[in-house]
Length: 205
View 1 (cartoon, rainbow, N blue to C red):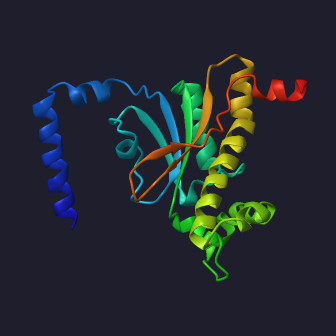
View 2 (cartoon, rainbow, N blue to C red; view 1 turned 180 degrees about the horizontal axis):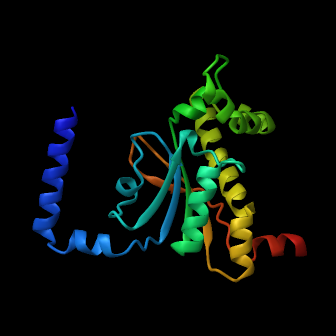
């Protein structure tokens, strides 16, 4: 299995160099992505592939069910680096339909450490129980919960001191929520974007 992986890498590298001899030299010289992607660890949702982006165009953090925990030092470190060092302009929280993490959060059975990680999704399910109850079946409820989890994640990212500080210095950064369909390979905009001035407008209102 490992030798097959290395062979695949060699073929990919050779094909890249054949198509563009300077490709790897450019990548090695500088990392300047425009996007920071917070996604699910699911192997079927690789950020570069589903977004149609090349290596070097997106900085990625992934975890089970794309949960944004305010105490997740891994996520916060990646977010800070993306904002302060890479100067990304667009932050994307991306979930997907058919998410195993969302499914686990709605099941009445133990899942080990994952139960602690998925607690924010269970809380979200309880707080939005009325809305979720209007869905036709359990699959539709889980897909709606996956969308709500993304929307919650966008809000949580926007509330971090990292983003608040960046916006105070007038950095033009926006946070967006997308959901990916495993069955059709399409990304959908959940229309929950937050940008500079959002919280100031909330205070004024």
